[in-house]
Amino acid sequence: MFGNILVPLDGSSRAEQAIPVAARLARVSGGTVVLLRVVYTPDDYIAYQTLEPIMMQKSLGVELEEARNYLDKLTHLDDLAGVHTKTDVFTGDAAATILSTVDEYHSDLIVMSSHGYTGMKHWIMGSIAEKVAQHAPVPVLVLREGKPLFADHRPAENASLRALVPLDGSARAETAIAPAAHLVAALSAPGKGTLHLTQVIIMPGRETVSQNEQEALLQQARQNLQSSVEEIRDGLMADYEAELKLAITWSVTIDDDIAAGIVRVAETGDGAEGASGLEGYDIIAMATHGYSGLQRWALGSTSERVLHTTRLPLLIVRPPDVIIREQRASARPTTEAIKQPVV
Figure (cartoon, rainbow, N blue to C red):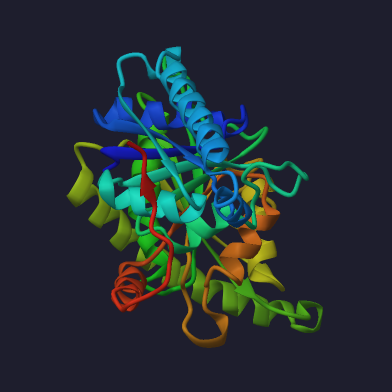
């Protein structure tokens, strides 16, 4: 599923943590890793260029050459040994350039590191990574410092990645399942990964709700989720039986907030009825939209809050209908900046 994997880099060692993960995925799929470096050209640079064009052009030329040398050096990393790798350098706005490069290289997945709210001056969450996740037409895997995935190019036989996929009963939320299944299976190979589907039942002020009422809600959710899981398992196995080695489990939990409940279950396993004994998961995978109306999962609400709160890697998947609607809108004339190829 992940034949072409795009890895945006900002020149920092933290951003480079995405490389071994992308390489591992490409090695399993026989795919290609594209290392991308965007040299940022702020407005004040362009304005000043009219005053000192020769000096500014020379400075930009130095930056571009450094970027090319930097990417070339990365291609010789042990993690990329035997992996088909391409590199590219562009100037322009980082987020817009990353998104346009997705189409150029027919990318199936973007893997990038987030520095979180650490005060770093590189690509911080709330900036480049969030913009990319919000608009990318392909899944985006956002990695977090200190929470590495199984990315060793010589994985252990017993490697096993556990992914939590929150569902809300909508078809849109289920669009994260197939990408998550492929990601977990690839990163766990030759071991067997686990895909755990969960539903968070929202019950504000649940201390005022009787135990019988809580149990009735849980039982209804269990029945709905179990039925969905059986359909999902049958569908995944029918479509990808030769590719995927997965255990599929499920649970229901109660919380007074969707995002908080997802993060709690993901990081500690706490409250995941039917999943006792776990200490949490390795990754969260979720769609950016679920419920329609006021409770929809849109980047800017639940998925954004999860992304900002969790310490775990997060796979963000945008539903096809959302992508199509945005593409139609973007087809209208706009004043957006277009990336500038480097010659």
